Length: 381
Ligand SMILES: NC(=O)c1ccc[n+]([C@@H]2O[C@H](COP(=O)([O-])OP(=O)(O)OC[C@H]3O[C@@H](n4cnc5c(N)ncnc54)[C@H](O)[C@@H]3O)[C@@H](O)[C@H]2O)c1
Ligand SMILES: [Zn+2]
Image (cartoon, rainbow, N blue to C red; front, side, top):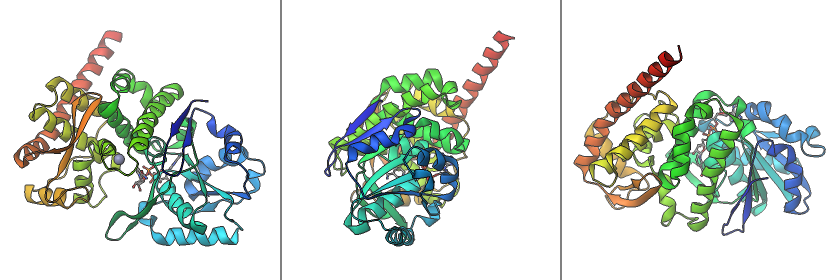
């Protein structure tokens, strides 16, 4: 089965990405050596959709009680980690146990942090069930929980021993969640993979239908990039910053709207439009390429509208971001599709003008796509 290798400070691990991969989880687990028990960690909703397929693939798995916890973002708290640890003790998990986290990014981050802390660390396997988790959160070793003061403020680097990314598990994912993950896939195309970007330009309709082979292709290419970047720079000292393309403005939008209006990927979508516009305005990126980025984002579908936000407020939020450096906001900007630079200081007037231009650029791209679809329909009639 297609396998991607990731290196980490805690040793290398494999990411298996293929339709039906969960059906062979037993085989993949055998490479991890002996254990004293397997424990599933998931949420009631995810387990309802994906649990049986995972459990069936492990001898005696169907009889095993999973440890279930709330996977709402508001429940991604230290209290959840304590709850999991207590249930593990009661279920008899010792240092030679293997924990299998089955779920989206919330389950993975909480279960991963629990695995890092429980008995000072037990083996962790991720079975990601959202597109975001498959292409992003399950690979790279970041785990953690939120505090009332902010997101992901307590956590640990704790790489898994194995990741099984099975696109078939995405069949039940709500469409808005699926589309939100697609923006992160577009991000990988822009920052590092012109071939992936072109594939998405040609095949967006097929991808939106969740065609198994199209999904396998875009997921494995995305994981390949995440794996390469995280292997080269585990702790985000340099190269890993390119993964923040679209996130500088995206995070600011999420903060400005109290994390309620946008799913994360949707905020990143606006962030990529703004970053492409900044790159165009500062003559790093050809106008044609900037328009290709906006057009591909628009091809995924409509986005929740950008909120009205004053320049003073936006500037304050951008400077307050944990990734701002001593009063400077450093941007990740593409030089062409598939190639990106990071750590770029941009004059405030350029940022502000680009933010103001973004809604019209997006609307224009949506109108263009609608006109094309119309013409295509007329030709077929
Ligand atoms: N550790 C990292 O590197 C990293 C990277 C990106 C995001 N994250 C974190 O990930 C979280 C977001 O994760 P997410 O986008 O995967 O969303 P999520 O975990 O919140 O899941 C979204 C929703 O989909 C449901 N769901 C999950 N899988 C399903 C399936 N197969 N079928 C039907 N429903 C399903 C969940 O129950 C939930 O309601 C955030 O907390 C973010 O901070 C972490
Ligand atoms: Zn992201």
